[in-house]
Length: 110
Image: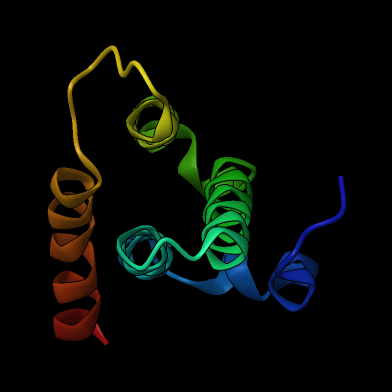
């Protein structure tokens, strides 16, 4: 699979802290929400792809072994929230709130 964020996939992503990685995923989730609200299907598809790409980069980060279960679960809940019949009942807005805490922590810790 080719990474959408190819410049990050070459190593830059793995230099970021967990807060920064998760905060960036949250930024993409915000783009998903905006595209969905405006019914912009091409932008929605692109934002979803970018979000999944960042999830996958984070999952592949060797430093994330201790957090892997939570990251994989967050990805699962994100994809579930996009389905027609979500199992977990989480909305994109709920997920956005979860990731906002990482963005705040990244800002404090940098």
